[in-house]
Structure formats: structure tokens, C-alpha cells
Image 1 (cartoon, one colour):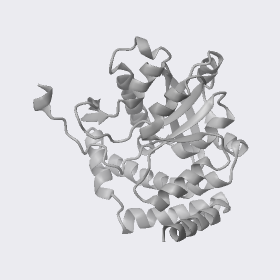
Image 2: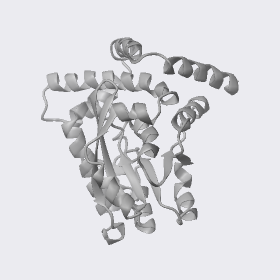
Image 3: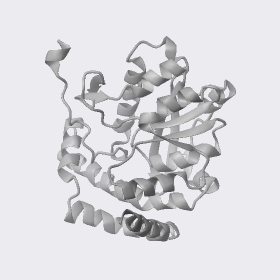
Image 4: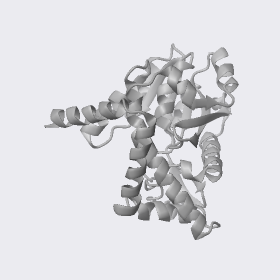
Length: 295
């Protein structure tokens, strides 16, 4: 049954991937109407997140961000199957880089890198674009989703036609230790919601006490990897702009928590400047810190 489901979904993705962009975005507009107005997909979660993150904004401004976010979300949905068809040249026309020299210096130093990108812009397209300009061995860290059919399809679309090596999140440190003899460029979606325990990194983020995974910092310090923040924003439909910010190229000199704190501030600043570009429909603040244990 799972094989049949995968075959059907893959057939749909292939059908979507050959369609022109104008038709995809027409379907995205229909998707927006259904998701936002009819089914109200995660509207309550999204609205609560926005209200708590931007208490200074008016209801009118919050609703404008909310509506544009749902337009962006539906565009991401129809853009995803294009990963099966378009190559580096096409991505080069749709993704521009404001300061590639940040990476070029690290490449010249033969420094292994963690690309830390939040759920912003089109992070899936960025993952497909890495091999076209990275001089390193490329590793794409992914987290399995609960639906096996969707998980298999996303892995297929992400890896089709590129040389990036997929590694499941739970295995990434072991994998990188085993391959310390090569220069790696590792892409991590670095704003996943963690377990909400005291071993996570807690800090104020968008006016709220927020926990973060510490795995990237711990791996960077143990393996001596540079950490680069990837700010990817939407310039228009199917058009994105990437700006890099070096967090550190000497992680072992950083105090515990310093890398994560700088990364969180990068994400926060990006969201404040581009509020509709982040993934507001997920439950970012579902955990609360146990203050008794902290005391």
C-alpha cells in the first residue's frame, strides 16, 4: 500500500514539475484561497505566533503579514516539485547572492562549514543549489517526517540530480567524525523546535523565552567547523536573494552558548526585516522552561 501511495504521489510531483511557472502560481492562488479562507489551515497557530512576536504592530499589519505568509507558503508548495527538473543554471537565474566572497574566503582556507538556514525564503531550493558553487563535499542534513510516503518523496526530490550526500539528523555527527579527512559543507535547517528540556539553549527570541537545539554549536566546536548564517529572502515569485553572515570561523574560541546566541540574533533580525518570509504555521513556542530547575 505504501508503494502504491508513493507511486501516485511521485506521479503527481512529476506532473507538477513540467508545468510552466505561470500555471503553478495560478494553482498557488487557488491553494491560498482554500488554505486561508476555506480550511483555515493553522490560522489560529499562525495568528497567535504573530501577535506574540510583534506586540507593537496593529491588527491590520498583523493580518497583512499573515496573508502574505500564506501566499508564500502556497508558492513553496507548488515550487517544490520543480526540484525534480531544474538544474544549477536555472537556479542561478532565480537565486542571487549578495556577498559570495564570505564563502570564497572559507573555501580558500579549506575550512569545513555549517550552513545554518532557518525556514525562510525557499530553503529547499537553496539545498539544491549548494553543489553549483561549493568547492567542498556537500552534506544535506534532513529529518525524517512521520509520513513515510511524503518522507520518501521529499528525499527523492531533494537529491535528484545533485551530488549532495543526504544524512539523517541523528547520524550526522557520527558521519562527520568518520569523514574528518575531507572538507565538508553541511546544510542544516537550524530553527527546528527541540524537546524543550534544560539541556537546550534558552534565550529571548521575538519577545518570548525560546529553546533551541545546541547540536550545531557542539558539533562546530568539536570538529572546528565555521558557522555561516544563510539569510534567504523572497524578491518575487520564484525569485530569491541570499546574504551570508559569518558567525565564526574559530568556534573553539567561543564560549558555550555564544554561537547559538549569535545565530538566534541573526534569525530574529531577519524575521523583523522580512516578517512574512518565516514559517509561522509551526508551533515554535510549545515548550516552557522549568524555572524551578534553573533556580
